[in-house]
Length: 211
Image (cartoon, rainbow, N blue to C red; front, side, top):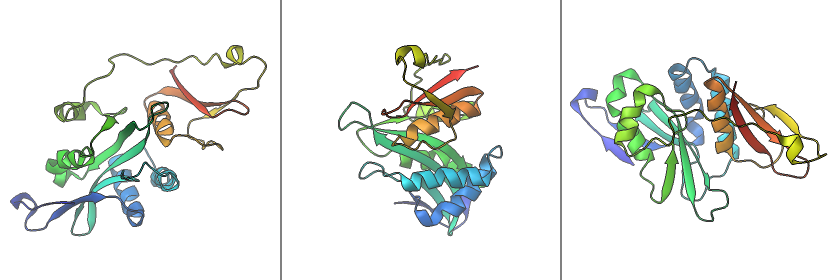
């Protein structure tokens, strides 16, 4: 747990800690202010998915928040999972980073706290342009400068098997990685066509394509 006390925030202490289930309402309210294109119900649904999801041991279930006098003034969500086909490899995607304007000085402190776990590959698939200098200063590097396009030629690949395609906001009725759905939703928010593709007797797959 990290505590800071500076003149910029009078004598009131700021505390950075993991988000807990009891914080969900306050975090949803904060993120609604920070991302007005999303409804409060959207954030409640997203946090409910994280409630149902069990991250690898020792990693946060929801992410981290910045708290002043019991009020949530900043938050960053983390979606942590095992890397597919690589036993023991961990990854965490940072998402939905927002700090109230009066506390923006401490926004890097919040994300630095989120990045303190060792032996983890961190990703940020939806960083806003104005945050990238800060993110790169914290050790992130750009993976690609281009546009990702996937063309799911599923029927030809899988013969006569029926393929079900449905929208990214829908919750699959089979086991899936929440990081995949977060990626699809972020792509959709930036104008991509983002879909789940399901095959009979096979795990749900995800794909994304820009129209």
